[in-house]
Image: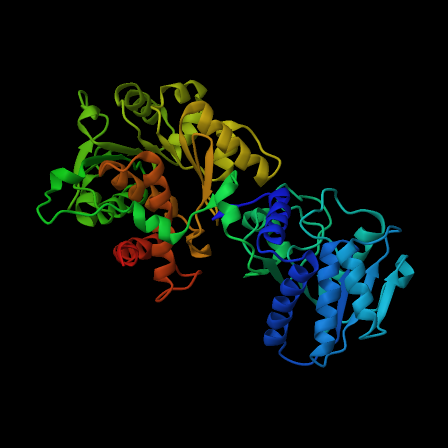
Length: 494
């Protein structure tokens, strides 16, 4: 799914109007009708409905919704934020139509005209839409604050007022909606954790915009679809043997952190690798042999290890950042001439030794969480800036960079996609180790790095989602995710 910019959504409307063909006011009526169907379906009891409208097309949607609700026997009150300018053509048309249905139309010209709001009201926010390009101030800002402080349930139409679609709204005043009814497709702003307090539960309403437009437009960001993921999976021959699926090595674990090595190794074995060796410190092999007898073991501080014989390397989980770990990672970076995956302490060592970046082979995969990313590539003021930096860094260093989050970003040579699978149960120690193991296994099987990253992130999240059948987001453990990797593969093979 392409995540369009604000300008591209305007172009999509225009494309539909000219190619369906349909008039803009008819398209607005269609969108408003679908909103009303949703509102009526989810209206649990009769409540006072107050609709707040700006004077653009988002406000026009609000006026049309008001008229249609009156037609359903409800009695909404309408409040129009007066800007001193004439409204858009479609706003004016719907205002004229609404006058024939109700006299409950009020104009807000000052703070004194704000209506009294109650907690059991339903407020419909149709003040500003996706075309907003400046932070709210003066009367609009005061109105939004008034609505937020009411404690009433707020339903935003298309996008919460004050929220930018494709740039950060951090520190701005924004409607805090419980529900957002967005049109046609998900917006980029709904993927940013910094916006979570604003949009509530997002429902994508199909208003039948012309799909052909998406074939003609290029988007900076995409949201990976399950249908695409399924096409990435390789089939296995019935005559396969373990040598067909690679011999991976995980360089992981240290005193007090051997669990990370075990978790990563289990995930790797569950994800299809042919053979796995775990490179660990001396005197720690017993716990690994007991936990995962399918894996082989070497002591990573031994002399003469031939790292080049492995098909893929994953390095970092529980590794530590002492002098021995630094020496190991430098040796591996200097000798292994294929893409590898680096996580956790490997990233911390790279951020502390900037020249290590220059040793990374093209296609190597980094999997930082936001703080690790900032240590690697510089502090970011907001998520949108961090996403942009990740895309630019992937291009500069020829790397695949996963910025972990609820919607993990995968940047590859200047392109960017978001992973939609997973849940908040993954916000727990061991989740990153699991992901490292999965991606290491995929690399070892010959998946190209970008595909290994995209497929690995999706499988990781999907396994966590499937585990919810038996667990909760509070109780989910990395081991639960690992035990559901097989089910995740099966689901994609269907």
